[in-house]
Image 1 (cartoon, rainbow, N blue to C red):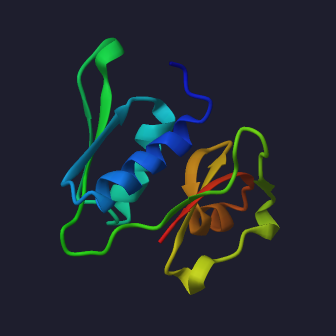
Image 2: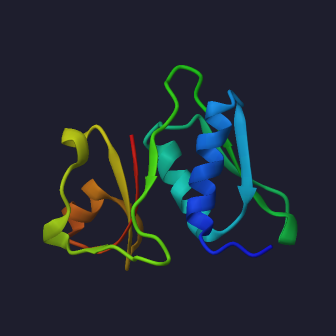
Image 3: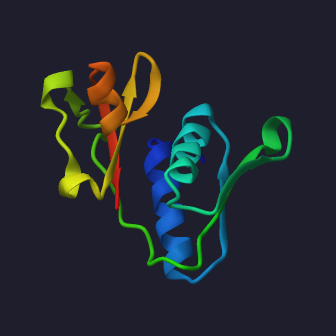
Amino acid sequence: MPLTDPIGDLLTRIRNAQHGRRTECRAPWSKMKEGICKLLKDHEYVAEAAVDGEGIDKEVVVTFRTDRLPLELKRVSTPGARKYVGAGDIRALMHGYSLAIISTSNGLLTDKEAREKNLGGEFLCTIS
């Protein structure tokens, strides 16, 4: 069954796995999903983000941290209502305690990195 919103599916899988008290979550692989999971790992929201398998069986595996509460993940831009922000319109969320992921011409960046590089793009999601 084809997905119409693969990023929303990834965020929902992560939310559901954490609320189900799982230690890890698996989702079908894509470059975008791998990039989002890498940003989560780089900013220490998850313990590990890895790619497992080859070819059509490739999956993104996210291992959760046990020392923090479940993540609050919100999809901002959806396939039916894309949300774009210019470089000057990007604001810090929750005074810097939250993370926004923006798809720019230089790849996936956090809100802070996009402001520093003066780049705008599609506002994918927020994580806190």
